[in-house]
Each structure stands twice: as structure tokens, then as C-alpha cells.
Image (tube, rainbow, N blue to C red):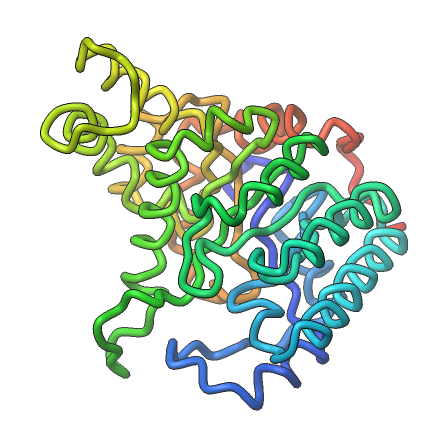
Length: 325
């Protein structure tokens, strides 16, 4: 990393054998190749990249593919307990974002929220951009957001397979184009629906530099308060636009696969500097992430490696000596 030290990796995936077993029986249509993974591989990666702590999480599509409600709940609990055990075994190297059942299972999701924060002391949760054909802004999901708000949770929003995609092609897997759009769609909906202000204690991290949000933010903020009407009560549309823009910028943005000069030039001149976080997308990025890492090292993003992450995860005692526990 050319001398830089990314202290906390907020976008670092685990792929337990139990997850791969579930995935093996599902046609994902997204044409994603799930890489091999082990705790040893994650430790090797963080050591090689001078990372103090990796915040572990499951990638899409998550437990909702398991089938029945009871099966999904059981797998979520199994995976959260597993991630917690990894953190206990390597307390200075790992934290974790817990998984939740589909948000349409309100009872299961809220019960798991209580468990992960009260018993497991999770660092936050991962939410998919949509569940059962509904995006995170859905009124039906408000009790889950209320529980997360009460817990003052860090919420890592990860793109999921688009249920709105008109077609799929083997030449265009969903992570290439659909995933950034899913993040943009969800982030915009959370703001324009008013949920971002309704649940202010939730600290939202948007994956992959916010998708297309930095590029489209001006268009979204202006049109939402002019020709589209919006949901804001400001009579002055310019004030409404400013409010929308402020809310769009209030999320955090991880740099997983967002280290190209095109993306960085836009993001670091648009987003607040103290809301930019390092993310590797290990092990999915693989060798594809190295060019991004090399470019990232030449940009003035030092704060994203330590200070910004400490604001979100004050329990982490960052240190210069990276010793395996």
C-alpha cells in the first residue's frame, strides 16, 4: 500500500463451508463464482496489507436462499455465532457485521438484533439492498429499523441480486452493473422516503463507494424537489435540494472496488472526508483488487484508514504492532 496503513477493513467477507453448501443447491442467476476462503486466508490477507482489524460479513445473497423461515433463522444464528467465535479467537484482528433473516420476517429479524448486540456484541449488521421484492425503505420494515436505531447500530448496506432486472446474460453478471445501481437505488430511497432522518442513530455504510450515488447526487437532489415533487415539506425547492443533498452525504462510503482514479476523483471531492472508509472486498475481489489498491495509495485518503473507522467502532484499540492473538 505504498507506505499507507489501512487500519480497518470494513468490507471483508467470510465464506463458511456451511454457506457454500447452501449456495451449491441454488441457481443464483448472478453467475458469481464463490471463492475459497478460510480464517487463515483472511489473517494472511490482513497481515500482507497491514490491516489491523477486518470487519467480517457474509456476502450476497445471504441466508434468505435457505428456504423456510425456520431454516433461515437457524443458519443466520449459526453464522453469527461462527463469526463471533472467530472474533473471540482473534480479538485484535477481526470484528463482524452480523447477518439477519429476511426483513419480512420481522419477529426473527428483531429477535436476532437483540441477540447479536446484547449477547455477541456485534460491531453492526449487514443489510441487503432488498428483501422479498422490497427495498429497505418499505414501510413493512420500519420495526426493524426502529430496533437498529435503538441499538445505535452501524448498518453496512450490501447490494443484492436485482429482482427488478429485466434480463440476465452470462456476459454481464449482476455485480458488474446491477450491484452499483442497487446501492444507488436503496441509498436514494432511504433519503427520499424520510427514513434516513426518521432513524438518525443508524450509521449507514454504503458499499463500493456508494455505487452511482456520487455521480447522480446532484440530479437526484434537484429533481426530487422540482419535477418529481419529492417527500420534503420545504416550500423553497432550493432548500429542499440542500436537505436531500445533505442526507445523501450523511452515509459512509467504503472503497471496496472503488479505488480507480475516476471514482476517487469524484468521491473524495463530493463526500465528506470523514465519511470515507477502507474496504477490500476480500476474497471476492481477488487479484482484481490490486490495481485499485495501487491507485488508492496515491490519494489523500489517510483518514479513511484509522480516524473515520474509530468514530464508528470506538471499541477497537488500534495499535502499530500487529500481533496475532
